Length: 352
Image (cartoon, rainbow, N blue to C red; front, top):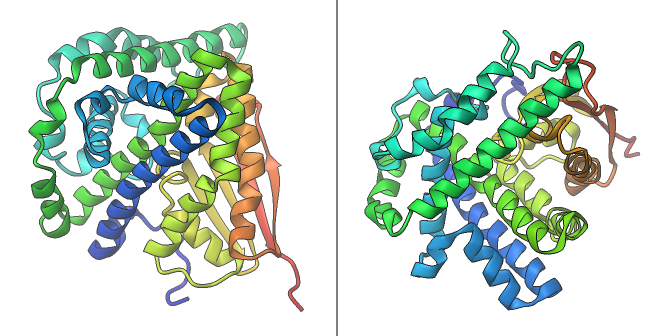
């Protein structure tokens, strides 16, 4: 296993080659997740529906954009979104490094769309920066904040999609990736990887929203479970951290090492790791974007997101070792704004 497991290891503390590897794997995961969703929708509703939903989510498909161009368009969107909502970043801070200019550009028009939602979001936060829904009338405040976040995100994303045209072609992707390979330092690469993780996970929201508009919540939820559980998207996400970190073991320590740099885990969640011994560990999600977005506002979507985790977290352990058992120690609802989102315990049964 090499060095002892460090639960506080920061992304910018990784070797440069590892960060470059994580970047490339996450870029590829964006394309793979798109393909997995397309196949699931196509099998259920046909190619025409799958293409229509894809074009709704990624209008640049109409221009013949490549999968990598679609990724960079999502990356530019996330860069803009985190400028307005920096708390979306979980493993990096925007001020730890300069964001490459290729991802920025002129977004003055974009700020006009999101300033009202940013103002609403700031008013609905507690001094600690957590959801301000404690006390009476707590549910009304939670609903207001959840609606502000959801509407703000939807407006922000729609404005971006309507404005893009051929803007993505302005980026010299090959030159950018050369800088990733040989120029950017570790703090810049860690920031870029956090952007990439958010861009990669954005795809599910676009597919889910497109299917829900056509066929309703039940259909969207069925397909999301199909993609992440039955078609293996959750397992693939864990494998990104596993392979980039060179994890070869099959115990709980190996599992936590894999989770520690899986983009769909630490890239979007505020995670704390506690390794009790190599066969026993605990993982705590202090904050969850789905919970922040839907809590007290969209109970159906919140329950569905939690159901995905309840099904997917055990599968992640079993991927490494069939004898790794997972038990949720804490699940939503939260008691108050300072409560954790959820907590998971992994144990390796006696292998004798």
